[in-house]
Image 1 (cartoon, rainbow over the protein chains, first blue to last red):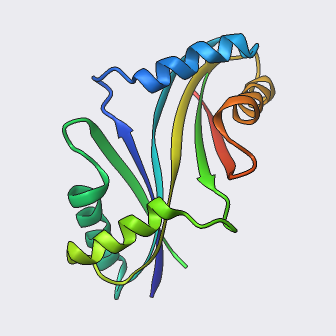
Image 2 (cartoon, one colour; image 1 turned 30 degrees about the vertical axis):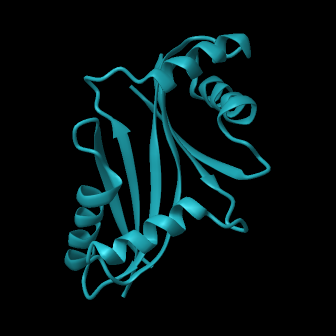
Length: 83
Length: 83
Protein backbone atom coordinates (compact mmCIF):
# COMPACT_ATOMS: atom_id res chain seq x y z
CA UNK A 1 0.00 0.00 0.00
CA UNK A 2 1.12 3.53 -0.73
CA UNK A 3 0.87 6.12 1.99
CA UNK A 4 1.51 9.82 2.20
CA UNK A 5 2.51 11.45 5.48
CA UNK A 6 2.12 15.20 5.97
CA UNK A 7 4.51 16.18 8.74
CA UNK A 8 4.93 19.54 10.48
CA UNK A 9 8.10 20.15 12.47
CA UNK A 10 7.72 23.33 14.52
CA UNK A 11 9.84 25.18 17.08
CA UNK A 12 8.76 24.31 20.64
CA UNK A 13 6.17 26.74 21.97
CA UNK A 14 8.36 27.63 24.96
CA UNK A 15 11.17 28.80 22.67
CA UNK A 16 11.55 32.09 20.89
CA UNK A 17 11.24 31.80 17.11
CA UNK A 18 13.50 34.56 15.72
CA UNK A 19 12.61 33.78 12.09
CA UNK A 20 8.92 34.16 12.90
CA UNK A 21 9.54 37.41 14.79
CA UNK A 22 11.45 38.83 11.81
CA UNK A 23 8.66 37.93 9.40
CA UNK A 24 6.04 39.40 11.76
CA UNK A 25 7.90 42.73 11.69
CA UNK A 26 8.12 42.69 7.88
CA UNK A 27 4.37 42.16 7.67
CA UNK A 28 3.73 45.66 9.02
CA UNK A 29 5.93 47.21 6.33
CA UNK A 30 3.90 45.32 3.72
CA UNK A 31 0.66 46.74 5.08
CA UNK A 32 -0.55 43.48 6.62
CA UNK A 33 -1.62 44.58 10.09
CA UNK A 34 -2.95 42.88 13.19
CA UNK A 35 -0.63 39.90 12.96
CA UNK A 36 -0.39 38.66 16.54
CA UNK A 37 2.32 36.05 16.15
CA UNK A 38 4.06 33.92 13.55
CA UNK A 39 5.90 30.65 14.02
CA UNK A 40 7.90 29.12 11.22
CA UNK A 41 8.86 25.49 10.92
CA UNK A 42 9.22 22.79 8.30
CA UNK A 43 6.60 20.92 6.35
CA UNK A 44 7.58 17.52 5.02
CA UNK A 45 5.58 15.39 2.62
CA UNK A 46 6.77 11.80 2.79
CA UNK A 47 5.60 9.21 0.27
CA UNK A 48 6.15 5.65 1.44
CA UNK A 49 5.15 2.04 0.99
CA UNK A 50 4.05 -0.06 3.95
CA UNK A 51 1.99 -3.17 4.66
CA UNK A 52 -0.47 -1.41 6.92
CA UNK A 53 -1.27 2.01 8.30
CA UNK A 54 0.28 0.91 11.61
CA UNK A 55 3.53 0.02 9.90
CA UNK A 56 3.48 3.32 7.97
CA UNK A 57 2.99 5.18 11.25
CA UNK A 58 5.97 3.40 12.82
CA UNK A 59 8.17 4.38 9.88
CA UNK A 60 7.09 8.00 10.08
CA UNK A 61 7.73 8.05 13.84
CA UNK A 62 11.24 6.65 13.30
CA UNK A 63 11.92 9.18 10.53
CA UNK A 64 10.76 12.08 12.70
CA UNK A 65 12.66 10.97 15.80
CA UNK A 66 15.91 10.02 14.10
CA UNK A 67 16.19 12.58 11.34
CA UNK A 68 13.51 15.17 10.77
CA UNK A 69 12.97 16.77 14.18
CA UNK A 70 15.43 17.87 16.85
CA UNK A 71 13.50 17.16 20.09
CA UNK A 72 15.49 19.76 22.04
CA UNK A 73 14.12 22.57 19.90
CA UNK A 74 11.23 21.14 17.90
CA UNK A 75 8.09 19.10 18.11
CA UNK A 76 6.36 17.27 15.30
CA UNK A 77 2.82 16.42 14.24
CA UNK A 78 1.73 14.32 11.33
CA UNK A 79 -1.21 12.86 9.48
CA UNK A 80 -1.08 9.75 7.34
CA UNK A 81 -3.21 9.28 4.23
CA UNK A 82 -3.49 6.14 2.13
CA UNK A 83 -3.11 6.87 -1.57
CA UNK B 1 -12.00 37.93 16.00
CA UNK B 2 -8.83 35.92 16.35
CA UNK B 3 -7.83 33.60 13.57
CA UNK B 4 -5.06 31.11 13.06
CA UNK B 5 -3.78 30.28 9.59
CA UNK B 6 -1.82 27.10 8.97
CA UNK B 7 0.20 27.67 5.80
CA UNK B 8 2.34 25.21 3.85
CA UNK B 9 4.86 26.60 1.37
CA UNK B 10 6.23 23.78 -0.76
CA UNK B 11 8.63 23.52 -3.71
CA UNK B 12 6.72 23.33 -7.01
CA UNK B 13 6.06 19.75 -8.07
CA UNK B 14 7.83 20.27 -11.40
CA UNK B 15 11.07 21.23 -9.62
CA UNK B 16 13.69 19.00 -8.10
CA UNK B 17 13.84 19.25 -4.31
CA UNK B 18 17.50 18.58 -3.42
CA UNK B 19 16.88 18.81 0.33
CA UNK B 20 14.16 16.18 0.07
CA UNK B 21 16.38 13.94 -2.07
CA UNK B 22 19.19 14.18 0.50
CA UNK B 23 16.85 13.27 3.34
CA UNK B 24 15.40 10.36 1.34
CA UNK B 25 18.91 8.92 0.94
CA UNK B 26 19.65 9.30 4.66
CA UNK B 27 16.48 7.38 5.47
CA UNK B 28 17.96 4.19 4.02
CA UNK B 29 21.02 4.50 6.25
CA UNK B 30 18.72 4.83 9.26
CA UNK B 31 16.88 1.65 8.33
CA UNK B 32 13.69 3.34 7.18
CA UNK B 33 13.03 1.63 3.86
CA UNK B 34 10.45 1.95 1.11
CA UNK B 35 10.40 5.74 1.13
CA UNK B 36 9.27 6.67 -2.37
CA UNK B 37 9.77 10.41 -2.24
CA UNK B 38 10.18 13.30 0.18
CA UNK B 39 9.48 16.97 -0.39
CA UNK B 40 10.49 19.56 2.15
CA UNK B 41 9.01 23.02 2.51
CA UNK B 42 8.00 25.49 5.17
CA UNK B 43 5.12 25.41 7.60
CA UNK B 44 3.96 28.74 8.93
CA UNK B 45 1.46 29.29 11.73
CA UNK B 46 0.11 32.81 11.57
CA UNK B 47 -2.02 34.24 14.37
CA UNK B 48 -3.99 37.29 13.32
CA UNK B 49 -6.95 39.49 14.11
CA UNK B 50 -9.55 40.29 11.48
CA UNK B 51 -13.19 41.38 11.26
CA UNK B 52 -14.32 38.35 9.32
CA UNK B 53 -13.00 35.11 7.90
CA UNK B 54 -13.02 36.74 4.46
CA UNK B 55 -10.81 39.57 5.68
CA UNK B 56 -8.49 37.07 7.42
CA UNK B 57 -8.22 35.15 4.17
CA UNK B 58 -7.28 38.31 2.25
CA UNK B 59 -4.54 39.08 4.77
CA UNK B 60 -3.15 35.57 4.54
CA UNK B 61 -3.20 35.72 0.72
CA UNK B 62 -1.30 39.02 0.79
CA UNK B 63 1.22 37.64 3.29
CA UNK B 64 1.81 34.53 1.16
CA UNK B 65 2.11 36.42 -2.12
CA UNK B 66 4.28 39.27 -0.90
CA UNK B 67 6.51 37.60 1.64
CA UNK B 68 6.15 33.95 2.48
CA UNK B 69 6.23 32.17 -0.87
CA UNK B 70 8.38 32.70 -3.93
CA UNK B 71 5.97 31.86 -6.81
CA UNK B 72 8.83 30.98 -9.18
CA UNK B 73 9.87 28.06 -7.00
CA UNK B 74 7.06 27.48 -4.51
CA UNK B 75 3.32 27.11 -4.14
CA UNK B 76 1.28 27.61 -1.01
CA UNK B 77 -1.78 26.11 0.63
CA UNK B 78 -3.48 27.24 3.79
CA UNK B 79 -6.35 26.63 6.14
CA UNK B 80 -7.88 29.26 8.40
CA UNK B 81 -9.32 28.46 11.82
CA UNK B 82 -11.17 30.85 14.11
CA UNK B 83 -9.84 30.70 17.66
